[in-house]
Length: 292
Image 1 (cartoon, rainbow, N blue to C red):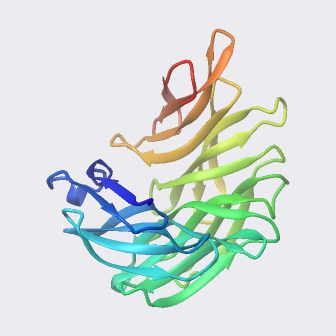
Image 2 (cartoon, rainbow, N blue to C red):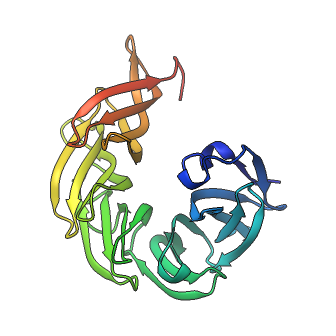
């Protein structure tokens, strides 16, 4: 039996719930369930996206609503694709829910955006992608109820994998699609709002010259134009896999890096702290001579 196991430390990042008493809860049945994303629903509840196995080797998204003590209040399944992952959920206007993710479309993965009511009834759905693998990893809700989705494409761009960013309107229709990268491999893993007109995207960026990988951060405007771009990393392989805004209006990128232990390179967890202009303030590594 595999179940969702939610520890309240995750919920501490949700400010409206941070004063509540700690708890831990498990959710699920005899098949596979995994939690992917958590967000506020109202002042006393939160919502969580879950991937659930509804038939043997078939997965779909499930949106679950919990009270401040983690008790399951209600939930609803979304679609019955062979394989679907929801990685971002937002409460939009008129108590509707927008979720983004990706699903298995015949022989490859495509990006999915969907709007439902809080009972799980679908209001609209759209997908994006080409003939190869394309998937999203994060998204952000805009002031106009549109969404910016960030992820990875193998169908478009310079070849290999490239950063894939899509801006939609409030109906989930694409306003623009942009690709960023070179043929050595790029992926976006996080997006944060600097202002209503500027957004920060982070991930990993391949180097054509020496087959290395750096963490990256860039600022884009609402048209997808690059306003600033930075690379971070002191070792051969540096992966940025999560982005958050910090209290001083800077940013933090978490991931992993191959740290040099006297000529032996071992993967360690890494944290990059940036200021508001994406200048690197410090880098911290976490781990020992082994794999982290």
